[in-house]
Each structure stands twice: as C-alpha cells, then as structure tokens.
Length: 186
Image (cartoon, rainbow, N blue to C red):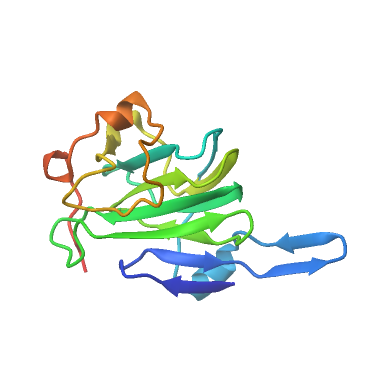
C-alpha cells in the first residue's frame, strides 16, 4: 500500500497493492494495521455507495459539522470521477484551497478526506459507482454543503458543461455564507 500526501494537510492518496494473474486481480482496499503503520488511526463505522448514470453528474461539496464530522475513504469501483477535497477549517493556512484527483476503477486509487474538509465529485464517464467508508454515522442535523462553483474556491472541474445536480446542491451556499464550526488545530 502506497500513501501519498497532497497539498492539503491530512488529505491523502491511497494506492493499494494490486496482485494480478491470468484470472484477474486482488487488492486489499483497507487494512487497519497498514493504515496505523502510516499514522492513520480511525474506526470506520459506515460504508456508502452511490451510482450515477450520467457523465457530468456532480455530487457535493458536502460535509458534516461537529460533533458528527466525518473522515471518508473514497474509491471509484466503476467508471471514473474527479474527486475533490476543500479545506473548510477556519485559520488553516490552506483554508478554501482544494485538491482534486481522478479516481477510477482502472487506477484503483483512493482518497482519504479527514474531518474539516468538504467533499465532492464529478463523474467523468457514464455508469459510475463510488464507495466510501466513514468514521462517523450520517447525521442529517449536522449535514452541510458549499456551492460547487464558489468563485472563492475556484475548483477547476474537468467537464465544462452544466453538471447534473441535485436540488440541494444547486442551492448550496457560498463558503463565506456556510455555517461552519471547524477550526484549524495544527
């Protein structure tokens, strides 16, 4: 397992070792022991899966507030996505900065997104499945979002058409208007 730091502290690219032969391949997508070897210690309590039929579907930017903030381990099991994390920790040197990466069934990369970051993705292909683990259960009362095209963040989404959005995501506030309770603890 290879773990690479990104420009955002705590946001990590995880590349499982893939073992293949004439039958196909096998990979270990999560190992508590191997994550702990890299200083990552958490207990995942919920697995989620989403399906998007259409290329250009955008989900996010979502987060959960304290006390139910979530760390997520995201992977794409069918098709491809552009996955994004945005630092929403007030006082952080990277506040409002973003990191994006292509996750796909082919490249098998995963993204670890810690508490204090908003998360979203855009589908790059038709028929996309995304799976992610969370270290906290979903809590609707702590649910929040930021507008996907907030100019203060300036995410460079790879598909330049009007994305397919949920009604909730279309009406999400700008970062400066969001009700956030994350602070940077260094």
